[in-house]
Image 1 (tube, rainbow, N blue to C red):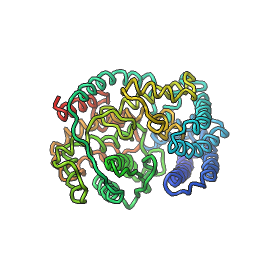
Image 2: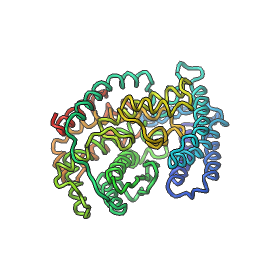
Image 3: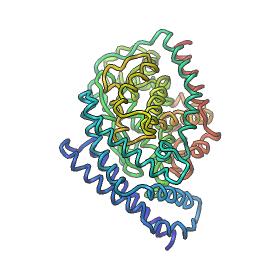
Image 4: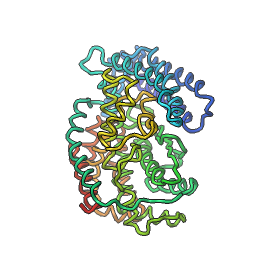
Length: 490
């Protein structure tokens, strides 16, 4: 037995996992609707194969004998050891049933969302939550880890619910105070009009190109819920179109390109290893949120986008780049997380974080989730939820069992604040580039300082290495205060 044997075995496992991911991408983009049950069986069967490989007893023996040749191999072994310990705690039956059920549940959620029918989804969600609690109990067995922390570790290794709650507790007062100041000021004129889907998609493709998306290793498709899928040399993105709101399409595209860039720019030597992907969802979100917000919604870049829409022949009601910039960044309490402005976005995440913690702890019954969501939304946003697709049915995450995922969106914002503080210090001429639609200096900085390393380091160490200081929420809150004080003339 040798380290080479272990890494060769892991390479095949990684390749099979990529196939599973491609099945998921196809389900959301190309698969005929009637194939849902068939695809669920396929995904469940493949998950059974993957679980057997990930818990193969030879891995323990290989790990005991492994001698890393360098730092990269040492990092690979760290990931394999951690994943082996986690997967070995989960019974094969449970892993396979979770894969099968969540594949089916996604389609049931989509139907319920389209029909605004919570009752259609609740029985399935109840099953998903029960299986995720069983999984959490298995993962936490024999450790001091709580149920929610056991699930969170899949998305943000090293984080804990108590730590995240502390971060959110420090953020919330400043976010609420900023929101109150902004909403008391005159609101900028919004973008109005109709923007045909074909027109939006042409601009979306140009935006993806502008942010460095490699079309030879990817493609753009439409989906109900935008996402990025794959790694290395096959990274696909999706967006969605609302003809009355082109910003939804444009900024969803930029957001997913941020994810895709992280995967496309990982060092080719790391592909088909545990290092050949993003190290955590929080770090992944730091890329997508910085691309979308600090770069894509900047005054400089929105000036370029304004001119690009004019060149496309868009019938804009806004007549100047400044008015367009203010419309892009208009603050208003809305129902939809993915459409939320930067001031409100993290409040959406805090709501979901608290609700899903309560679900996993057993403190909130699935049957009471809709009422709990609506009550909390009214408390946090001052607006009554008008229909389930604007409330608990709006996100795909719980249907596919992604409990512990939501807080990583805000962690991504926090990391993005730190990265952009360092990036702007290093690139004093950035705005002049962005005004020409040239993001190459910024995206190159991200590639060289963070993306190429993949999962070589732990999540917070990845960000600290890139920006030169330990990350915290301060730079994000300072950025938001400065940006919106200027934009709203506070």
